[in-house]
Length: 118
Image 1 (cartoon, helix red, strand yellow):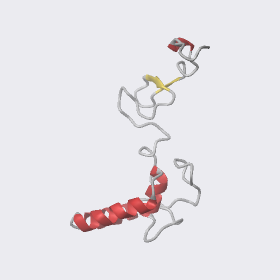
Image 2 (cartoon, one colour):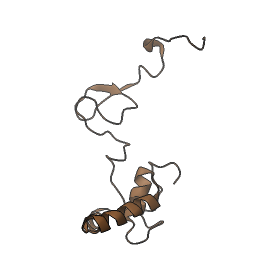
Image 3 (cartoon, helix red, strand yellow):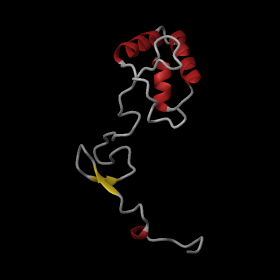
């Protein structure tokens, strides 16, 4: 195959990989994380999964460490954002942290399936 040759979509291996949305049963791409018909978040997405606190790398309740693992971002950046929200948001950062601390279950010790570096 030449470098600039265009391959028809019917001949590409990923073009035929389809699955059914579990919510509306429409046919969507296999790699989709959100259904384009009903807008539902599909499995294996950080937003559709249960959020967990973690005892690994925690400072107070493990909320920021757990969210950092879930979304694969720096725990330091998340902690700074929480402090800024607490100071500039008239205490809403503290309220949000306490609410998340209460409703988020503790992870059993296994690594996050969403972040390859953990």
